[in-house]
Image 1 (tube, one colour):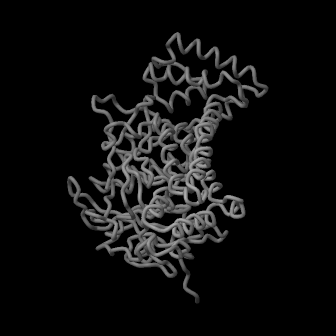
Image 2 (cartoon, helix red, strand yellow; image 1 turned 30 degrees about the horizontal axis):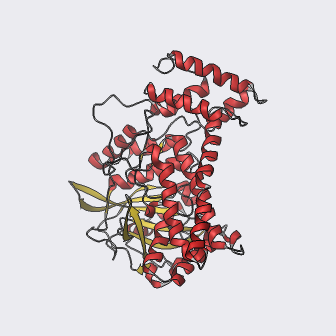
Length: 487
């Protein structure tokens, strides 16, 4: 009888790039791995056997103790502008096992995060703690449920080893699934440390992997830039529409695939305040909620700078081409954001005054300290009572304008309700709920709180009774909520 296999099918095209883009090495084995979480639905979509993944053989792969057949482990080199300052970087605690091909032919990176030291670790130990790995699992899967492009989490394994940070913490390894780990910072690395031929090889690889439809374009590298810009404008608009704050929008954390990547000090807004910052290291608010669209454009400018030698042989003309393209970013972003905000308010068509109507609501929400998610949820189901915002005269006037706006479109109020239900989630991963789950897992080894939270977040647009308790706000606190990178 043929032994049943997990289903791994590795191809490893990234390793065909010039050798300076990576270092080949295996993960560092851990003492006593134990599976904490396995994403069964993701495993099934990848064509993998979840039952076998729970076996010792499967857990050994997630722990880095065994390399699956066909994999070609490596750590990727890249650079990045971190808080505006250029730095040479790389996978300091991650190993790319390789690229898995699904039965339908889709290609996904399989990466172990927290799998040991690499040549890019600098002073780090290459390991990760359980809390931050569970945070990435929770938030990335919540983003997937919200319909936002994202890397995903296949598994979390406890290593049985202690991690020394400010305190002693349980160690863990996350298995991350991504369309690729090509970053803006990967191109910055090529532009700053390699030859033009290396940069061209990387760009050609990116086109082959993500945008094969532009391969025959007259200027395919400019077309590559436009594709990435279009995806980023759409992605960041989606973040804004659900109140998501990435927290560390460095260029090495911008994936050219258009997926959200690297969940460190990320969090979701409760009270609407465009100046919201959660990250403990973002002391000047560079990556505050209101700044995310602008920073997206700044990062894209760095991407364009890296690609200049490929845009045109003459730098002056290359710069003109890049600037002309970049000028469209703000418009692209606003179109995505306006379309999304209209849908959150049940509006199907466009009128010139829509932006003003939306901005008025947001200002009222800010003035009255209204919760972002619950305000739109209340508008969806016409449950507008009991809050300072809804009891204000200003809101009553705004509501009359909004209702008049709905009456000017041909779609019915019932149509608007259905649209709003698909755009305004009942739940988000509330910060106090995430912390509750992480505390239970780390301090008393109780994973049940995380499991329940994940189940509730799986379909945030279900608007069911189970989600009701997860929509409640945290108790008032004199201390602002703060997040940490978890490195």
